Image 1 (cartoon, rainbow, N blue to C red):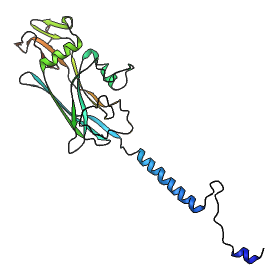
Image 2 (image 1 turned 180 degrees about the horizontal axis):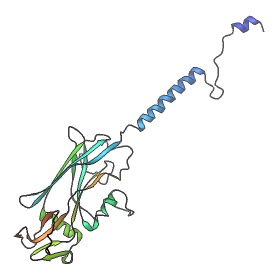
Image 3 (image 1 turned 135 degrees about the vertical axis):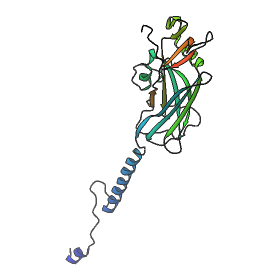
Image 4 (image 1 turned 60 degrees about the vertical axis):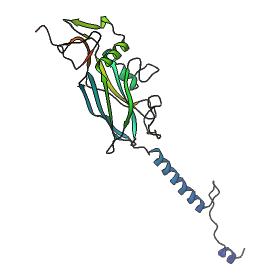
Length: 250
C-alpha cells in the first residue's frame, strides 16, 4: 500500500472493547451517570433529621367551679416543618405506670395496640397547630374534677377495697398519672383527624414510634368526703394535685 495513502488516512475514533461505543459517547454516558447518582443521593437526604422533641411548657391549675386546666406547649426542632400534628392527653392509674410508656415507645413485648388503650383513658385528642414563629404547638384542655375521677374509677374498676377512709375523709389508693403523646403523621391509626397535613412523610423514623411520649410531673389523687375542710356531697369527688397526707402520729 502506498505510503501517502497511509499518512493521509484520518484516525478512527477508538472503540470501547465492551460497550462498542465511541469515546465521546462514553463521556456523555458517564456524565449522565454521575448526575443520576448525585440526584439520587440528594433525594435520599431530602428530610433533615429531627434534633429535639420535648414539652417546652407545662401548666396545671385548679379553676373556680371545680375544674382542672392543662396547658401544654410542644416543641420540635429539625425535621420537616409540619403545619399540625395530633396531640393526646392520656390518663392512667399508678399501677399501670410501667406498662403504658413501654407500649407507646415500642419496648413492650405484647402484640396489638400500640397505645395500650386497656391501660389508658384518652382525655382529649386534638389538632395542635404550629406557631408562626417556630415549630411550637399549643394544647389546652379543661375537665371537671368529678368527671375525671369517675372516668378513672370506672376505667380501673375501683371499689371500696381500693380506698382509704378515716375521720370523714377518704381517697382512692391508686394515683392518676397524666401524659402527653404525639404520634408521627404517618401513623394512620393515631394521626387520623381532619386538618392534618397531606404530606405526612418524615425520613428515617419508624412511624409506630412516637414523636413524643412525656409523663407530666404530677400525681393526682381522687378524694371524697371531707376535702379541704369542706364536706362534699355523697358520690362527689375532688382531685388533689401532688397531695401530701399529714403524718397523724406526729
